[in-house]
Length: 198
Image (cartoon, rainbow, N blue to C red; front, side, top):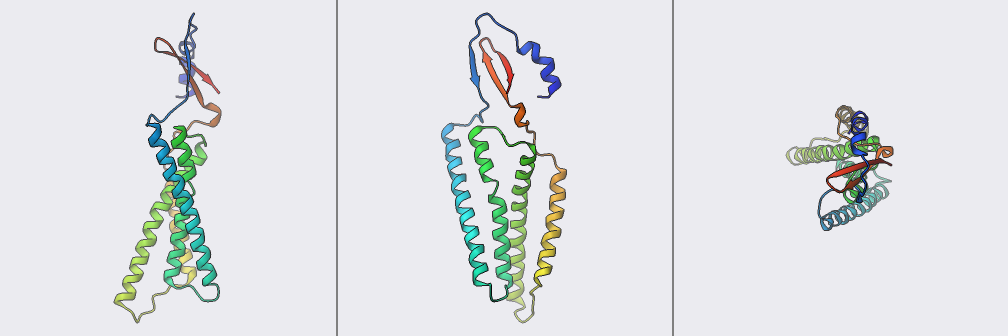
């Protein structure tokens, strides 16, 4: 609801009645509370397993391969761990959104959340496709050297990431109210309600 429409409807919404019955109703997702708690527990476990697993994998690869150069497989696994971390980082925001039933973080965080979500989904597909193509070359042409230098991998990743970010920021995902404009709706008997700005 925009400010203009609130201003228009404010006299109608704030009518005083002689004996109103007021109930404080906060926005709720409308889902069964058991299913919301179940999804929150699943997301929390995915977040913890994803953070711990990916960080331990990155640490192990960096520790084992500190003295020897990385081969293509290890580079792909490192990229995949990084992409998984990008995908896992926004899960606490999704958990709070499910528990509260509305978005409380503002439009900037919403855009970052959506961008991380889509970047993780797209880049994991690209990394797996590149890994499959590399395996194909190793099996079909075992005597050809197919290893690209690390600078080439980083440049390809940067250009793809920049193109994807510029595409994502052109989209409008979030219809979010600022945290200063959270509405507390008081429902009054006879299907009338009163809007109080918090």
